[in-house]
Amino acid sequence: MERTVPSTASEEIELYLRTIYSLLRSTTEVQIRTLEEVHTATNSLLHPGARGETPDVSAFIYSMLRLPDCIPQVQTVLLGQSSDVFLRHGYEGIENWQPVSARARRRRCFYDGEKTLASYIASRSDIEDVIPVLTAFQIEWNKIHTLLNRCSHDRLFDILENLPGTFDDLAEILQLPEEDLERLWNVWASSPLPGQENGWNAQNYLLRIHDQRCSFGIRLLSGSLSEYWRATRLWWDHIEHAAPQLLTRPVYFISSNTHSITNLLTGFAIKQQSAIEEFLNRPKNVRLRDEWQAIQSGQTSSSRENFLYYVLKKLQQSEFGAHLNQAQQLDEQQHGITHIVSEHSFDVDAQIIELNRLDPSALDSRVKPWSQADMDFLRNSNALILNIDYPLGLGAYNILAKVAEHASPILGVYIMGKAATLNGVRGDVMIPNVVQDEHSQNTYLFQNAFSAADVAPYLIYGTVLDNQKAVSVLGTFLQNARIMDVIYREGYTDIEMEGGPYLSAIYEMYRPKRHPVNEIVNLYGVPFDIGILHYASDTPLSKGKNLGAGTLSYMGMDSTYACSVAILRRIFALEKQRLSS
Image (cartoon, rainbow, N blue to C red; front, side, top):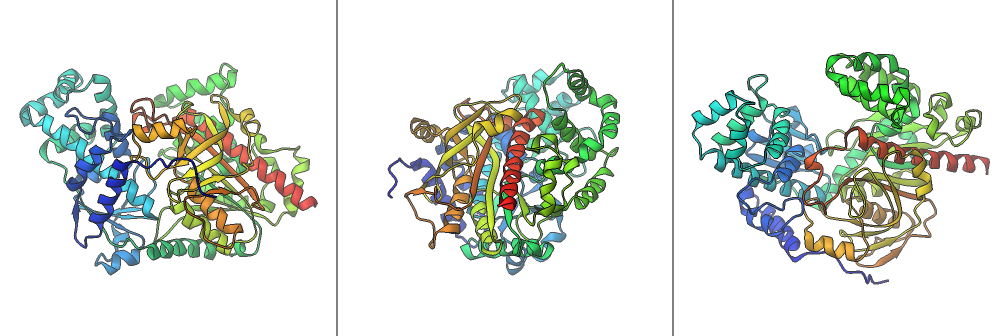
């Protein structure tokens, strides 16, 4: 059926993408400055102040959090799908370079210690993410560079040396409200540069901006579709080698993260409560300790379990609790959970969970649809859960298509991830039954396995919105006010990046041909479960207030765990029904 709803395509966005791909056809390095004008012309909702002389703080923070901390030293960015691609282009042993990562984007990157950054890409979506982020970073860096150079180096150093008393002077130089400068300062303070004086992270970051303009060059080593497929095959071969039982046993596929599902299944954090409480009593954890005491006394309705999961991660990141990382890994293995770290290709870790090895007594109480005795049916199950760290954009299509090619039967596909909302607030949960995919230009109609009633009992702070319409967009920077107007007028309120590509793969899992293009596609006849849950992390209509302005933090775990609980309860219910029949 031909699609009748309008495309959300924008002439400015289409021009931006055409320019990017025409430049990347070059076999030499392409300068990001050639994209700055077309980038600003898109009027991106994530970068509304691109044209102004005043720094766009939210856009700058957003891009900094999605690039490795070494990025101020980088001059050349290399993009490739696998180590073989880098080797063929003369870059031998890049995985022996320093591994680096961004705080808010999972992508395998390696830094040569001088000026070159090598980054693995899983699909075209990575290109459409990396390049706008680099461009936004360069634009905003150079704005601040210009403003700082209107005062002398000596005066700037004097201001930095006498902080916080001179904070208002620095804000005046940068033409920023002190509130915005403080947000930037906090990010700089946690972004160490190699060789800098301890405790002077933010000051040295500013001095670096003062002393040099940003000028990135980028080189795409291979953009062929076959290389993306080859990288996906390398990813799958590594998983299949570690867990060959995926080829012979029924599989429930989950795309989520690598912490919430396992936390709910093992109870490791609950067993570490005494160590966590000892950690909370340390002087720097006063705010968390007060929150814990409020939960214990019933003064707040926050989940005790969610709080322990949250603090456990902070404990493991500290010197005081680093030993618990190995302890948790051993505990997961005893519960039939195998963690598989991706190698030699893109950064998507996986977990294999054997249902018959789970201990019903260790399960989070929220995931048990029945009494503990009634959960004994798990011992007779031969099913597995394949849980992957959710990929970006078209990488989702490549991965699920590869999984479906080898694992059979697949009993359910469950997708949980972040999204922007046009009608809710951060922390809400959105449940779509219509997804418009800007990759295939298809509009997918499907029976979502979840409704509000499946999630609401486990959500404390947010609201559950079911019967929603979602749009799978091309990239985070690739939306503007014009696109948002079209989306909202057509009733689409859920904006994300993976749902459409996953549904394209699902179409090919039960139909004898490749997914169509620019059609309305009915997936109601699919012979297995489809469940999609999105939790709101951004509100793009709130004038630049995105995750560049903050993070979901502990409050964001409320919606994450509510979705994870719903997914596991659904799997257990289906598995009990399957075994009994």
